[in-house]
Length: 285
Image (cartoon, rainbow, N blue to C red; front, side, top):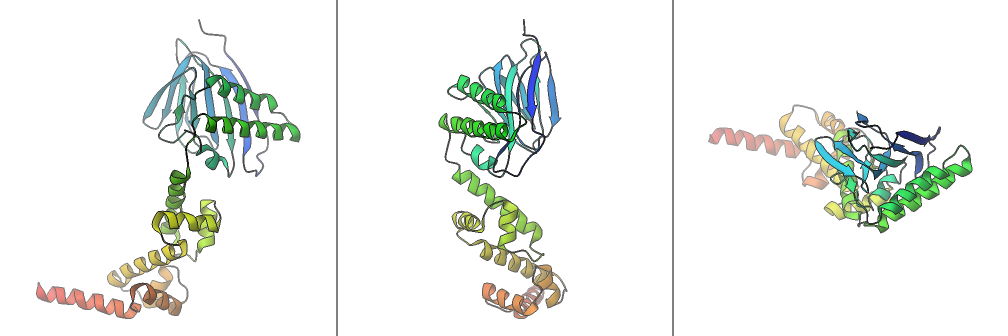
């Protein structure tokens, strides 16, 4: 016979720009079949199941979750979770976010491919989350205490099976930077804009690119722009000034110097060679 349902929770009214901040916390005994979602959270949300069981869905993936399991909802990810109809779960949770949240979570066993984890000491995980809830309140002091308890909780998760996040996180930063370059190379962006979009410092961005492709972010951006310019020179009738502007250079002379440095040819000569090669190919055919 399932326990009588209840829900106790706390939500912050403000979300200050802190490295990491507690958004909400609480504990709940769910009714049979109780469901949240499908929906998206704007913050990281960790649930620890204290009793019963249920189902956690992330996209097409379905996870059967029971007492002692802990699951993570990543921000911006469509999820739903449903309590079992005969043995509905009870759980405690904490929601948090901030610039450091991704870095801290990357040191735990949670991944997008493995959002459900059974840690070595489930009771300690439960107690740590409940300590966050107990510390929460409306005063500035209680907010700081809750953040302190959150750090202790995340430290506990790392101790109970963390891994070195550097490889995965560096790759994620790199892919994010490349997406930004691909979508914005035609604008006057620089390395500072890329780093700001990714959410890391210029020096950290440099280390990311050197580790992933052994090329600085500035050289990568330059080569990407020149590659796009080559395509335009070969396949369009744009003027040289229009090609330069299309790949993010307002100064045609500067564009020509950069292009020659990368390809060994000035853009006009490059275009002539490609046109001549194409004409010769037509003649031979």
